Image 1 (cartoon, rainbow, N blue to C red):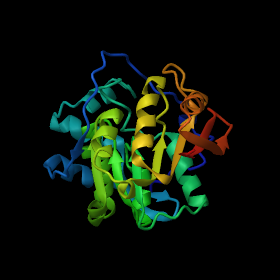
Image 2: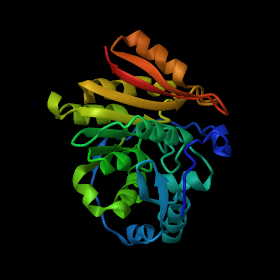
Image 3: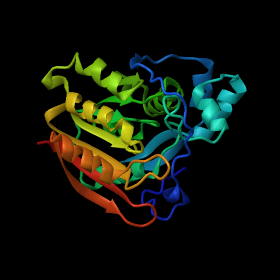
Image 4: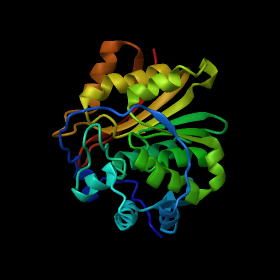
Length: 280
């Protein structure tokens, strides 16, 4: 059985910072991604392991290394594969690190479990979802979940397979969107009434670039219910890419739309925290 260590404080990964390359930035427009069966998907689904999530002991998960190997064998030249082959976590506007689960995701899962956050019948957005583990946890508690990641390939070969190996029926309460956050906010925000907006937005390790803060702020502002809550987990500083918790707090203070409370902190290794964010 494959198990995550949810303390994450003593793992080597807790010291990691994203490896990034700079490029000319042309951001992908957001679009809804539909489930597509394929021989590649079927090969991926054969490689599921069981992981130990809080309140979901039999959750299944596809190891990203297995996905990379299968894509290599299929000669499917995707931006995700090229980045992974070059050991890069971030190529702005090309690949946004979706094939790796960073330690703050573990922090947020542990917090949601310990606080017994009730999600039955509610609507959740897993923003920057990557593996989709936060959304799958939400689905297991009875929520409806939208999964958003920049890369369509991450959704097709990582997020959706992770949902499928747990229970294909979960797809009925799931939607998937790729593309840029600002484009996503505009696409979804134009079609949702107040009652159709999200009760909760969960997001982890999405503060690594201060230039993205207006976009993530727009997602929060347009898509969260007035009574809703955001739980955001991130490092205090992202060296080399220029973001972190203090910078985002400053951004929130400046814009005067949301208030926030630090509900959890981890001081060993790279400092990390979880913010609870609500409308003022």
